[in-house]
Image (tube, rainbow, N blue to C red; front, side, top):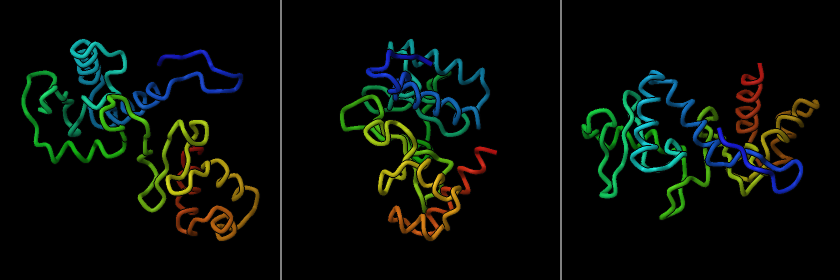
Length: 178
C-alpha cells in the first residue's frame, strides 16, 4: 500500500485509491487463490502501466477468475483471454463507484453492511471514515452513541435513521470489533 504526505497533521496518509485497491484485494481473496490474484494484478499493472491496477474500472471478477476491460469495452480473462458472461461480472462491480470518464473510483460501498443500511467510504465525507450513505454520518458516531447507553430508537432519531438501520450498523460494527 502506498502512503502520501498528509496535507495537515492528522489528515489521511493513505490515498483513497490505495484503500479501494486493498478492499478489492481483500474481496478477491474471498474467492480466488493468491497466486491467481498476484498473476492478474501483475498482468493488469503491466498491461495498463498503472500501479493501482486493482482499483481501476478495467478489472473485474466473476468469483472464479480475474478479467480486464480493454478500450473497446470488451472483457477478457487475464490468463488466457477468454470472454466472460457480462451479467455475472456486473454484480461484483456494484460496490465501487466511478465518475463518468474517470478511471479511478470516488466512492466505495462496504459490502459487509446490508442494503437496509449501506455504508460507504467517500473521501468527500467524514474525512474518509465509513459513513452511512443516506446521511453521511460517521458509523463511529452512531455506534459510539449506542455504546454510551442510548437506545437504538434514540440513536435512530438523533441521526434521522430507522431503528432497523441503526441495529444493522451496530451489529456489523460490533461483530467486526470482536
